[in-house]
Image 1 (tube, rainbow, N blue to C red):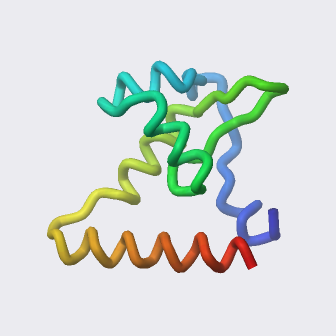
Image 2: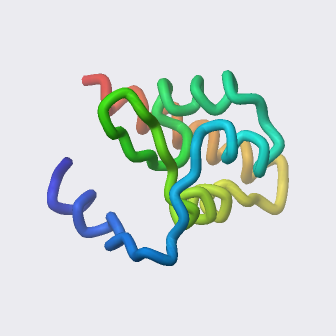
Length: 92
């Protein structure tokens, strides 16, 4: 993680609930495998890895939902292109 990324990571507080993959999937109305695929591809919300466990901060879910809220199909397509470019850059 570089300095810019570190600057964007919020400091956790005790009033920021930690959720399981199952809880998040149910809350945002997607399947657990879909959420796991997002995590694998790097397109999903930030998560916490503790040993073999994956957890999500509620604030990370809310931020991710906000960042993925669009007003039109054209805007959604632009967001999709941006994500593909970012993922390709990260693999280099």
